[in-house]
Amino acid sequence: MVVEDGFVDLSGVRLFTRTLIPDGNCRGEEKPMVIFLHEGLGSVEQWRDFPEKFIEKCRLPVLLYDRMGYGKSSPRKEKRGLNYIHREEQLLSLLIRKLSLKKYYLLGHSEGGSLALIHAAQHPVGLLKVITLSANTEHEPRIIPGIESVRKQYEKPGSKLKQALQRYHGAHCDDVFYAWCDTWTAGFFHPWNIKPELSMIRVPILAFHGRNDEYTSLQQIENIRQFVPVKKEIHILDQCSHHPHFDHQEKVLAVIRNFIEQH
Image (cartoon, rainbow, N blue to C red; front, side, top):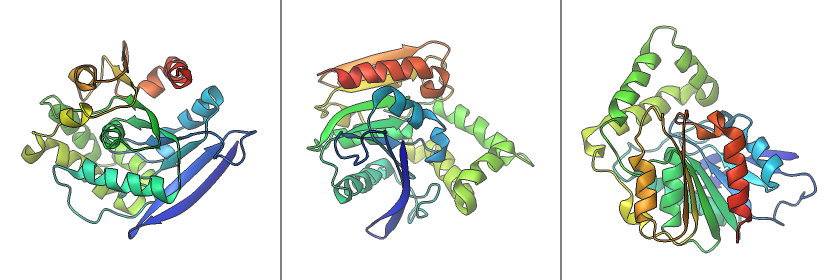
């Protein structure tokens, strides 16, 4: 496997990228790229070994990047509003054009899943399919106590959570955390949902959600079932948290491979 780290400059924003190319496919462009979109506290490194396991199973090249404000990428330039994920979608589209990706898949976790679904609603020419892991499709009341519990962990003296996030996000660790925490618990964000976008999607969707998700209910994935008008494959996993790709990695990878290979 070839691993290439680098940076891409987009309209004054510098994004850290990592490309993983399977052995025997050294040019990378021979097969569609799979773009991984991380969660609201995530980064390239926080996918752990999942990208490598994905490549072993699916034999496709993978592109990971730190979203703006995360990891090694440029800090955020503005305060988040109700449409901040839609604004990030514009940056994702710029990245795809900059890298001249003709055919690609999206794989998004949590907020990254929302980003993938919003992108799919724009009917991009090269997008083949979308895979989501615990994607957010609407704000719901139970999100708030889940996030407030994490806030308490983060703000404890000597917090292990804060130390862990500092390893990935460095000097802008607090900005990453409070941008996520304060936005999703704010009153202005309660109306947020992407149901209209779901109804505009025209590519196949594979969606996973854990029955024991600590932040959201199964309504998130039921929205995908209800509003996406084309082929969708829904998997609700027992004994599973907000991280299906860690809790049930082998099953998730097997289902993804089958989904990708379907015509």
